[in-house]
Amino acid sequence: QVQLVESGGGLVQTGGSLRLSCAVNGRASRDFHMAWFRQAPGRERTFVSAISWTATHTYYADAVRGRSTVSRDNEKNTIYLQMDSLTPEDTAVYYCAAGVDPGEYEYWGQGTQVTVSS
Image 1 (cartoon, rainbow, N blue to C red):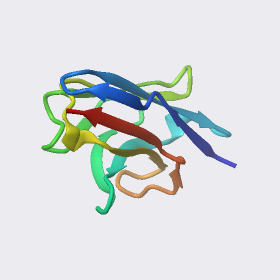
Image 2: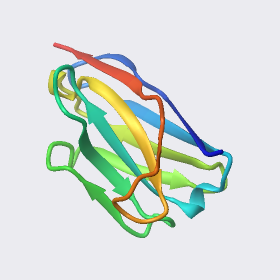
Image 3: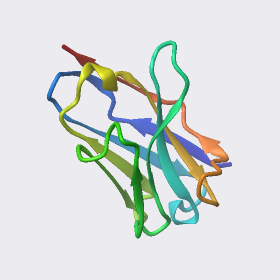
Image 4: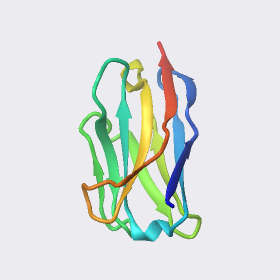
């Protein structure tokens, strides 16, 4: 049974930074293409970032490109999302997702709340 456990969310002021983590349990993280999504109150879940199995390729939504960095440590079975220059528009629940194939995510975490105050 694969489980994804996010951590690192919290309350931060505008301009601040956070690093989200996603621990993969039950299977080696190197088996998965990994992604981050977010869902703001009253909105649909949207793509934030993704990283290929060995971090060869990374992808970002326009909304976070240039101020976010996705990374992974397959030895620790953990994926990270460093987010800088945060604004209130980044306030959302952030979800980690895993899939054997890019773009097809079979496993999801429970989410971690990020709140950016103005």
